[in-house]
Image 1: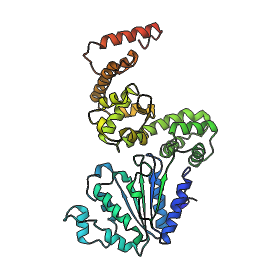
Image 2 (image 1 turned 120 degrees about the vertical axis):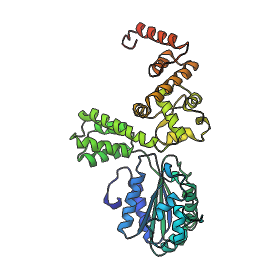
Image 3 (image 1 turned 90 degrees about the vertical axis):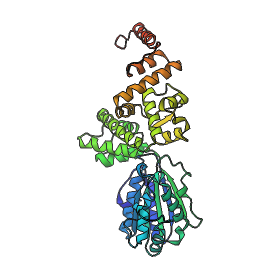
Image 4 (image 1 turned 180 degrees about the vertical axis):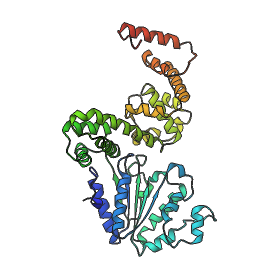
Length: 391
């Protein structure tokens, strides 16, 4: 089954369940549905498809999107959601915009009252960034959801582990579904290539597309669109062009994901881009800054964002090619200073001279007595190995 007749390879199960949820809404069945996956795994696209299906059936659809920048805006997400709704009192409107006295759960009564007569789909994207007031408001809505013909459809990224979203909990009489999105499999990539490129690909091309995109639907689709726009065919001989385009798209994806992380998490990702897995987790945190060691769940957050993966020492970048994109976004002086501090920590940790030298070459001047001996030993080792260019 497809939502709105639009194929989404790899998401057939989710499309069928969302279509059923919308159909059940028309029969008066309330529910809470949560979509969870890494950034780019198709949550927003599935929300859009469900919303269009509901609108086609004449249901009311109210939408909102939470963002990190508005996490401190009281009722920011609730205000977005209720903005198109008619019948809100002046007091409610003032409470939602922060221009009136504080009101407990503004607009909830009006929403539930109108929801008894008109099937309503509430769509909220990126709920991990809900402001506290909106979070309490949605909790109260869910407890009363059985009083209206209403479905709450929300999405989140990897930071919402299965079972960890408080909005997934509802009274027994309200149906709850939690759908975790997986990376695309080989057959899904093949279907996506055929859909976007207009013809099936050979196996070598499909395998390369899966590896280059890491099964991320958003990265894969955008890369294939750019690939096709240049007139290329999905054949083995065009794999180098595909990989180059996918690397660029992947880099843009990395920067978007970084924009949704805390400052401390970004500092750790930048530290990883500088030193890779040369340093263990404690030294990596020391390089990233004083708050890294105290931020709860930081390794899990970075792994669930898709930017990092576990390694023998602690963490490393999931996509090494993203290193250049991450470092390019940093001011030059800050980048050089980070390399210098990484080299000093690596020296204290007895990291091999060659790795320390690599860090020093990207750093500004480091006025330490150990620097010249490290560089000399590295140069001598390269000459003995016949690597004159490196020396």
